[in-house]
Length: 306
Image (tube, rainbow, N blue to C red):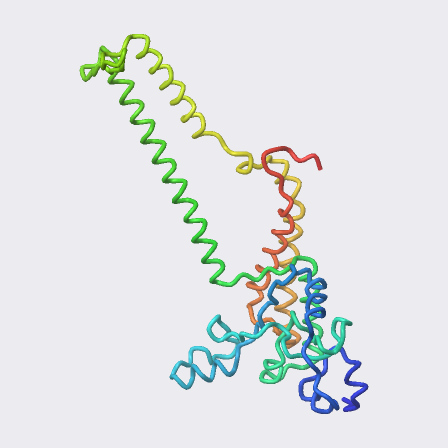
């Protein structure tokens, strides 16, 4: 490849080992360029870029120095040894058409991992283009283990809160039932209720007891009725599901085809990729994105007119 600076500055990705041939060091992308990249990648404003998917060799060596070789196996990547840099961080080249400062920030391996893993520029560009298309179509979907745990904790908290509400309601029902029985004169545990009449405490009149029983009956009826009611955001019309069935079928077919293509590429053609996950894991991530896209406009509580 030519070392001519003008030629290098025209590339979508300048190989890291050729950056030294440029007359000046290229600065990192500015805030405006980062904002434009987020728009291109269908990201929210100020959202963080995905992390580089490669294993950090520096972190691997730290583990090895401490006697831990569980992160040294070929192809191994986990949360502990995965690179902490943003995807494409430190790369240079006019990948997005926004200037050579951007490189392919937001997708693909960071510059350090490109050097340490000796990844060919052509392969990086090809996979970065694929990742851009996926992000544009399905949005940023990476969920860390910590975030998943946080969501699980929130959902468990909601379930516990609902159980407490139900327990409190059952207590109210029990106490009302108990009072209702106590005011029944045929009940052996009958206890005459009292009320104030002209400032004096006296036995309650039959009319007072009758009105109290009517109020109790109404309250019990409402509580028991509410226990079987669903709020409008808790049910979905069956048509909302049926009309999405073809899209779900297509999504399943797409991810199965993706697994097949990845397996053929790796084991038949010998083509390696920068995707650190297994074909199954990568396909599942893609299916989750398709699923979210299919059901993102799900209507609850009423039949859709679309």
